Length: 250
Ligand SMILES: Nc1ncnc2c1ncn2[C@@H]1O[C@H](COP(=O)(O)OP(=O)(O)O)[C@@H](O)[C@H]1O
Ligand SMILES: [Mg+2]
Image (tube, rainbow, N blue to C red; front, side):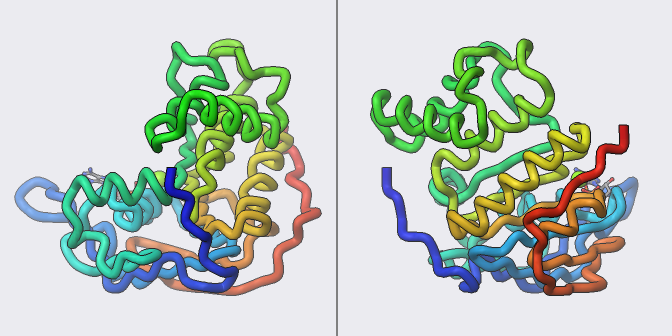
């Protein structure tokens, strides 16, 4: 596996300009991103907040090479224009550099926690022994040492999300995308998850881009960007509070 040196804290990991995304709707189009400029820096937990339907997931997809925008440009790491690459090169870029955490966890039902993480690392070219060692470490780091050989059906929601995080972090990604990572979790488990995202930025220097409509997560962010109806309406830098607590709403 090629482990590239991470960018320095404060260096841009993504710089997007003028992103426009339209979907077909009846005879016309609906514009979901209306000329979005966006950037994210190494070491920052950048929170993108906005109501449901405001374009958050579409933005992540456009930034990560999953969904081609009609207009605009994404410069990221050493790639000057992501959407000019071939589909294969975009996939390779994502595999080598990006981690993803989704609300629904996206785990394989048949695989144990350890296998979920090993599989991704083998795709990246690690030997089975290397993959096992690194996957075990990643799962231990999220507190799942006693759960290595459990399948998703015997894990709680919080544990499943931690497996997904271990899978994303095991490859030490330069960019970590999280889409509503806490919305299926109670306060206590949500707090474990947001702290892990905070650590990925602070200790690993990842550019963490977390989209959510949960305002309780703001406390951990270095930067809060508000999006509404496909437009960025506000962008504020702040000092994170790593000791913040997510009061349980249950
Ligand atoms: N594949 C699609 N086809 C048509 N409309 C879509 C598609 N994906 C998303 N949309 C629409 O785009 C808008 C923004 O969606 P999304 O980015 O998922 O918002 P958010 O993540 O902020 O809730 C919504 O109105 C949604 O219905
Ligand atoms: Mg969404």
